[in-house]
Image 1 (spheres, rainbow, N blue to C red):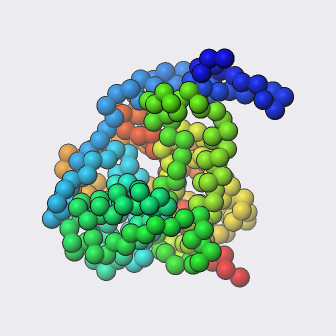
Image 2: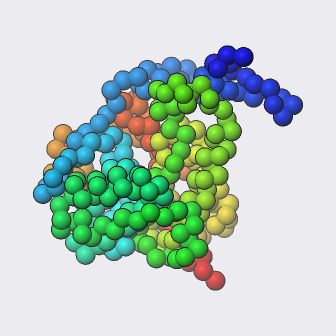
Length: 292
């Protein structure tokens, strides 16, 4: 059977598999828009230079990533957490925006990626900011077993299907199957439920992915509702209010992309935003404690 076969046999029924399976799955999700998305993926993207005054080096990241990190309100925040931070672009946006007395914990599970994160913090932030950024190597999904309700702002940029990268890499494309989505959503839920438990009452959590699959985006927020907010009193969702002036001195050429409303969040889509994204994000305001 060809690697590009759309189906393999297993568990008594056919399952989508490989490049053709990927094409069928996302073609059914996005219909006529799928071709435009693939064409946007093949383009140059929307990388912008982000240079914090006084830093040794610049960092290049997608303008959609800047917008997502800019959509987490930091006014009055003291203890900020970037739970899955490597390679470090969103950490830079948060660190450059946080108030002078605030501290940022920037965490990554992989030792190799954590090393890259630490290097980015040291070279792409000036000392007066980097000294207030603590990098760590920990499993964010189990962090809540050691602490609870201790951060007033959290950014969770969760590991995801990252279809833009899959479609560009034959190795991943030819071995793709929907079971990968199930594996990823299991990890995402463990991280999101941990992040929610780590968030203080009156705190704000921004959940984001670079996935196109709704199960990894709105699907995660729906699970959060079912677990913690059945009566609607535990948390509410906020509308994004990114202010370009907060980062204009760090990225003077930056133009923020637009975003589309979903059921529980927002999508930045590369076919509509000159290659920026895809990025999904949802902003969660925690009203009450979950500690009995």
